[in-house]
Amino acid sequence: MQQRRLGERWSGCYIARAVERVLVLNASYEPLNVCSVRRAHVLVWKGKAEVLESHGQPLRTSSSTFTRPHVIRLVTYVRVPRGVTKRISRRVLFARDGWKCVYCGTAGNRLTLDHVVPRSRGGTSVWENVVTSCAPCNHRKGDRLLEETSMTLRTPPRPPTPVLFIRLATDHVPDTWRRYLPGIENAAAAAA
Image 1: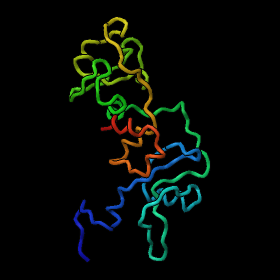
Image 2: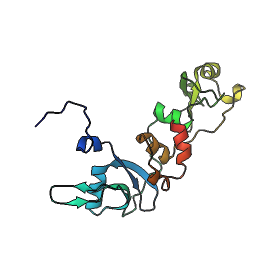
Image 3: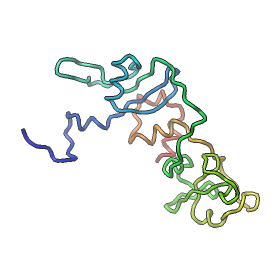
């Protein structure tokens, strides 16, 4: 048998399909996450989820054929703790703010993160206090409060929606997912 070089992708082999993603919905049809086809198949096979949308090509083993999941829904409702927020990352923060400065609206490669209430004044690193800022605006604001400057926020900071995390986890959002992801257009624009 011919050896494969590391990183080589063949259509039809498992390695090429390893990047396939499946949208996971809660029992209430609320988007939760994305997972691999393998993980989704295990959830369906164990009876913990059902397939709502499938690919045209099935999953095949040496003796069986299974539906290849594209969108699954959990059978029992999973309570998502609202008090626990995801850690702030620059990529998600910049995507949430549309890759633009929240003070002046410019887009560029000199984006930084800024604390609305500076840490030196007791501000914390939470989604409601951290925003995207261009370097000049961040420098101009310094460690002052908004009331002490002539600057205003174009949009108030808030935690990102689960749809934004789903959008950032995939290279492309398939059309079959769109009906289950309200607000994906806004998230797609933000993630671009």
